[in-house]
Length: 320
Image 1 (cartoon, rainbow, N blue to C red):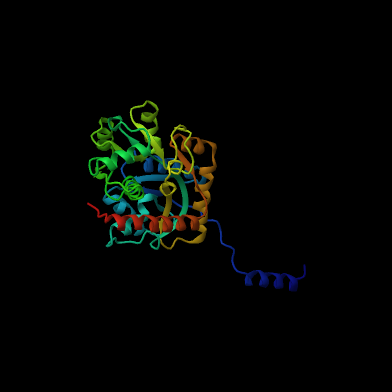
Image 2 (cartoon, rainbow, N blue to C red; image 1 turned 135 degrees about the vertical axis):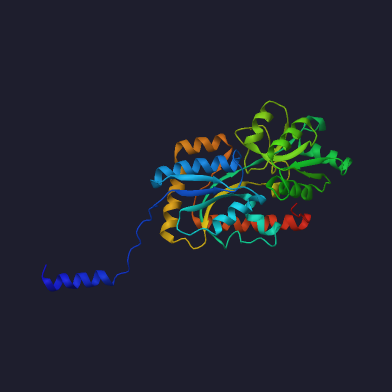
């Protein structure tokens, strides 16, 4: 190549837009789980953190910062530097925070950068044998015969269990009383004794007691029957397709994360979810692998926010 040709080629290369380099973390990544250790969100978050650590070459450390329905840990991440080294692992409750708390200090969509959808989980509508009902039709008949006499439990005001119960009440036209608890330990103890005889609860958590016959499964909220309890019909099969409900989990970062950073984190999350080990562990938790693009997570949050916001307003739900 002549000197003139070389200089011309160099000038052309310099004029082209720079190609973005793949982002590589320069320090450990903090993944905040805004709930206590041991719950489904925490278990899934740790599984994803482990897989992403292997793929990114840097440890992803889970940091449980619980409190105020997930607001404390989530706001902490909102205020972090948008450099990819701080993320938050959120669940379904994230999308309805603004509907429950009008003075919320952040917007669930606009103040965060979506990274990836992770998983979806169905719930089971369960009843204690004390009620002597075996299906949804029986529960509705009993509730209509005894308005206000039957109670259903949740792990707190505005939680997925609570909103599922409120939606079912509206669709079925029944009067059952919500009893909110603070956390999962006490509520399950009271559910098992029949003190509060009805609840929508995570299907994977309920599967063992349903299989043993300690509680009765009236329906599952997924689009399809669950292989964990295949004999239990779906809400749609029971006449309530509008009550097809799936809890979800996703990964967000602070607002303003650069596109190459988001792309690298999204690729690591999706690769983790595609691994046989992750799929096996997800199946054991009764979870459906989701994955996908950041935009799909943003759209999921907006759709769920609109759906459950209507339920919150109709039921006049106010946080404790």
